[in-house]
Image (cartoon, rainbow, N blue to C red; front, side, top):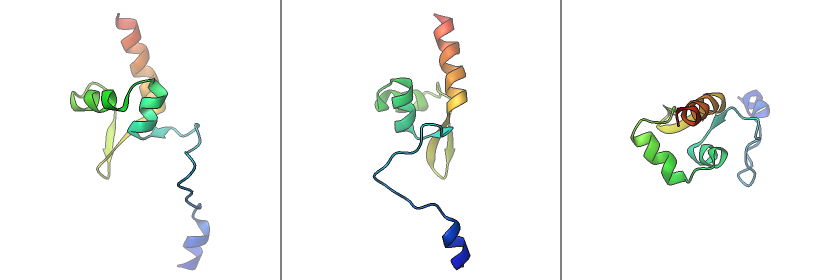
Length: 76
């Protein structure tokens, strides 16, 4: 059991995750897209933004959001 603890990365709640992270929280996705967090949750409720729930929490993939945003930009 001690071996497993050594392999874990330390959790530093004061720092945000690296920008290269492909999986984002709603807050990170909102910042990335330039949306207000409430807008992201509204889009989730209307099932208009690609996301998935993992363990009861919404998660977004950066490359999927990029494709979604480009598609929306080209529609108008």
